[in-house]
Image (cartoon, rainbow, N blue to C red):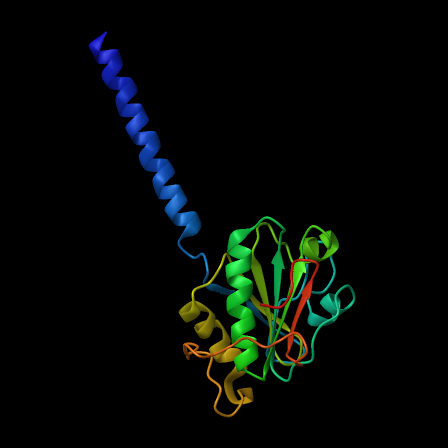
Length: 199
């Protein structure tokens, strides 16, 4: 009887260890940019990013514009797919909004994934928040699953904004204590879609 109990306890310990390692592997890249792999073009001899969605359509900013009104931007665009009862979505959208308000070359829009199922399928969004990053030419360059930290967001935007970055604005800078967010009447490259007001 005691040997059977020891075997069961050992099996439970092994199962918990495997589950813990699996959870760690699944969440270790949360908030980090996952770039879309570049493929070598045989005809042009240059690297091009893969831009095929799960339903056969192209993954470009133009496809997002078909279903969502996007704010103007001269550099990168971040499209965050959110859901209504997602608290990490609010935290992530607040961070992207702050960065877009301080960086003229960055545009941000938040999209309700439940209202735009076609968009979530096209970009293979499986959880919220998922931030889709596009360069200045509208090419889909990567995604961030989960709510990024300020440092993770700054690293993701560093390569996208590059020389398009506005004078004096820095995505690495923390907002000072007296910094206020843009009011509803100001023009800012921030938009939302049924989730909430600009943060």
